[in-house]
Image (cartoon, rainbow, N blue to C red; front, side, top):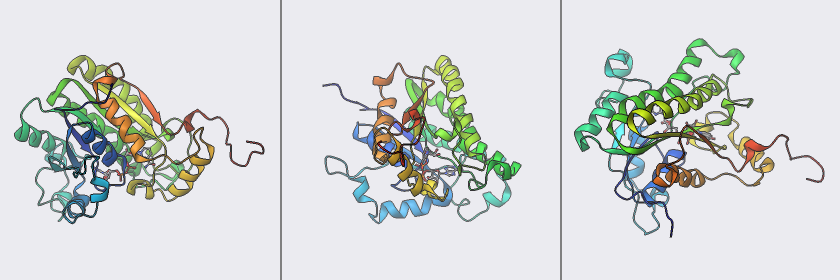
Length: 300
Ligand SMILES: NC(=O)c1ccc[n+]([C@@H]2O[C@H](COP(=O)([O-])OP(=O)(O)OC[C@H]3O[C@@H](n4cnc5c(N)ncnc54)[C@H](O)[C@@H]3O)[C@@H](O)[C@H]2O)c1
């Protein structure tokens, strides 16, 4: 039987702080396929996440098919807005959520992985994080600072992560990120430069696939997911309406589950996908292929 087999592989999933988002679902699917999984968690969310884990609050979501609980080999602090400690402003470094956790930068993550597991130590790297402080503002009303933060945290972070972690990856490894169709088509309400960040992420996926493919023999892809009411998406404000709109207007007229993205993530991380790189894969119930809304149209 052909099955996704990640036995003996180690994945790092950056952008997990609860059980509701795509990062968690990808981590779980990869673990179900046999991988060991480390996660990177944003320092302001780290204690809350560790509490959820310790107090059994997300045990139901962690339950594996064999009855055991999904466990993370490591939970690393990671603020992907910073490449190295020298770049971090004083007020962040001394902030109470940051000062106790050690080096939370991308370079800090690289060094911790090296110290914990040696080199090479990774097979799969998942980038499942984004932040646009002005996401509720139309692009016309977005400040330079808000725009640049969105692009820095949500797109350059992938470049930073690949440039620092690809050298730790085994040849044949895979990098994966999450994008959204607003990078190529207009989605009102997805503002603050987040659409620009996703456009950059998709373009960088192609260039990084070429450069890291040639240099490290790894693959780089991005999943363009449909809407999901994750914690990050709830910040947009109208996520439930988007979920309903997609469900009403997609070729498969039902809401997308995080699990459906998780299993595609596990596939893309596996050798079954060894021929796929530099690609945006849509996991959105087919919504991206529609040219016209169905809802409200008589007879359809
Ligand atoms: N939810 C959707 O509708 C949707 C649709 C398409 C794509 N996506 C993308 O999926 C990815 C994961 O988002 P999600 O919706 O699953 O929500 P999520 O809340 O589960 O994940 C976002 C994570 O990013 C983390 N984060 C924010 N700023 C960070 C920083 N500076 N450094 C490190 N981590 C940081 C948050 O703590 C959070 O854990 C994002 O790239 C998002 O744009 C989401």
